[in-house]
Length: 255
Ligand SMILES: [Zn+2]
Image (cartoon, rainbow, N blue to C red; front, side):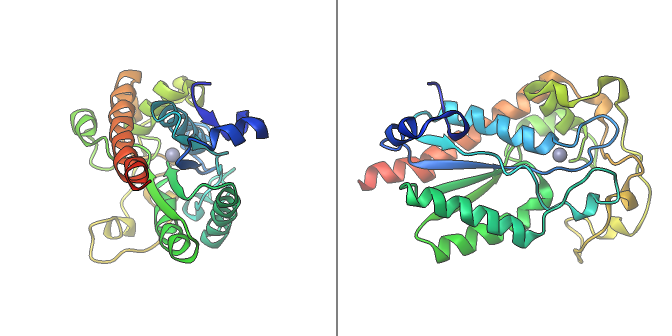
C-alpha cells in the first residue's frame, strides 16, 4: 500500500493503519460549470488527486477520506448542471465526517479544498468544529501556496476559474476533465462585480454570468501540462511541509 485511502480499504486494513495515522485529509470540491472546456466535476476531481498525492508523500501518517464532491456554488447556478450546497449543509456534512472519524481515534483533520467559493464556509467549519469537538480542524486551498510558479506562469489579472492555472492543473492531474478542442479565454464583461472583487472596500455576492458570458475567466489558451506540473508540485511541497510541521511532528513530540 502506497497511501491510505479510505475508499480503497477494508475495515481490518483501516484498523491496522490507524496505529500510524495522525491526520485525516478530507478532499472538498464542487460540482459546477467550468466554461466550455472543462467538465463540472473538475474541482472534486482535482481535490481528490491532490489528496492522493499528499497521502503518498506523507504515508503512513496521513489517511484520505472520500471526497465531498459538491460545494457552495450559488454564483454558478444560472449555468446548466451546477449543483450547490448551502453553507450549513456543507458544514453539517463535514461535522458528520469528522465525528465519525473521531470515533475511530483521529483527532486532526485537514479540509483540502479546491473551490474558492467554499473557503469562507470552511473557515467557519474549522473554527466551530475545533471549538465544539475535541479535535483540530484545519483547511487549505489546494494550490494557493504555489506562489512562485504562479507568478512565473500566470499573467492574467483576473484568473481562478477554468483559467490557465486551473486548466493546467487538470492537464497534469486529470486530463480527461479538459475539452481540448473547446478551450476559450474568459468572455469578460464590465459590471458591478468589479467593485466587489477581493481587495475592494465592499465585499458581497454576484453571479458568475455578470462577470463572464462563457463561464470562465483568465486565458485557458495559455494552459499547459508543464505549468500544471510546476504549480501542483510546488503546492504539494508546501502543503506537505506544513502538515508535517503543524499536524504530524507536534503529535510525535508530545507523545
Ligand atoms: Zn474549479
